[in-house]
Structure formats: C-alpha cells, structure tokens
Image 1 (cartoon, helix red, strand yellow):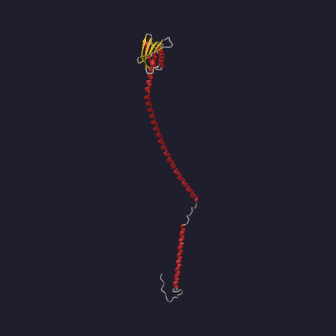
Image 2 (cartoon, rainbow, N blue to C red):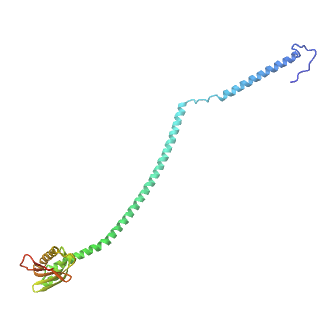
Image 3 (cartoon, one colour):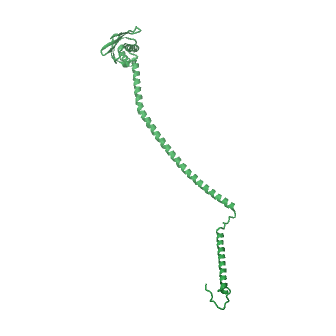
Amino acid sequence: MSYPEKNDKEIRLFGDKSIREEAYRKKILHLEKEIASLEIIAREQEDVDDIKPLSKPKNLNTLYYEGILSFDKKIKKEQELLEKRSSEITERLDLQVQRLSLSIESTFRRKIRWLFFIIAISVVPLVLMLLFSSAELFSNRLTFRHPNTLSTRATYLKTALSTQTRYHHQYEISSIEVVGAAYLINIELIGSSLDRWLLQSIAYDVVNTFKKYSGYAQGEISFTHSGKLYVKANIDSSASKPQLQFFY
C-alpha cells in the first residue's frame, strides 16, 4: 500500500512514523480483524447448514401405516401372481400325467393282448393234442373192453402189457399168439442186470397185468434175453398163483 508522501512539517510522535501513518496502520489492522471475523462466521454458518437435521414429518403414524399398506398390497400382488403361476404349472403337470397314464395303459393293453395271443398259440395245440390222445385212448379202452374172441383181445392185451406194468420199461413184447384157448407170449428182457429177484418181480408184475386185461384166460409167458430163456410162467385160470420156472 502506498503512503502519502512525507511532510517535514508533520509531527513525529511514533519515531520515524507520523500520526497519519499510524492511523492508516490501525485502520488496516481493524479491517483485517473484521474480515477474519466475517470469514469465521461464514464458515460456522456453513457447518451449521451441513449438520442441520432433516425436518421430521408432521404425522409419523400416518406415514407408517401408509407404508405398511403399500407393502401389504405388493405382497398380495406377488402372492396372486405366484398362485396363478402355480395353478398353471399344476394344470400342465396334471395334463402330462394324464397323457402318460393313457400311454402306459395303452402299452400295457397291447402287451397283454400279445401275451394272450402267444399263450393261445402255444397252449391250444397242446390242449388239442392232449384231448385227441385222451379221446383215442378212451376209444381204445371202450373197444378193448368188449372183445369177442382171444384174437381180438391180443392187440388190447399187448398194449396193456406194454404200458400198464411197473417194469414195462425193462422189456419189450416180442410176440403174442393164440393157441386154442390160451395165449403164448414172448417177452424180450432189456438190461444187463438179470438177477433172480428182478426176474421174479418182472414175472409177477406181467402175470398180474395179464390176468387183469385178458379176462383171466390161460397163457404161457416166456422171458428171454439175447435168445436165451430165463423165466417161463404158466398161467392157469383156476390157479391162484402162476407157476414160474427159472432157467440159468
């Protein structure tokens, strides 16, 4: 700051400085203090404005209930949307389950029909065969039950001796002849074990079956093996037991 030029006539009370200079200096210092004070006041006012609390609502209860109602409406709306969505999904699942059930039922019916068809194809021929065999056997029995002569009984007797004895798998009927009023039967034994006990069991079994199916006729049954005679049974209609002769 420029000061007025010095005048030699001015009184110097403060050393080299004049009264005017001292006054200017004091005034400047006072102004600087006032400016500093104003800056402090302005800074404090800014701080007060920054920390000034927000004004409170006039009615907190009203705002609280309005917020609750708004939130409740949003929840109900979301719930309705979820229920609608779940209903749509449930309906789709029910439709898919119904379609799947119909498909499984249709497949099961086709398989059952095919199974019945296979069973029918497999079983019917067997049943027909059994019925035919039973009818044929029954017819043969009816035919053989009423023979008129020994000759007509021969075929029936051969069938009975070949199937109705316990040991029928151990021999074969070689021949049946009718001589007078008696049968002459030749039986070929099968197997290598021909001990006395087995021969006796076979002979009694054959004789008992012969009596039953021949009408207790007379007869002679020869048991041979490889051309050799082992047992001969003489059957008399009046005798209770046959006569067995063993040949070794």
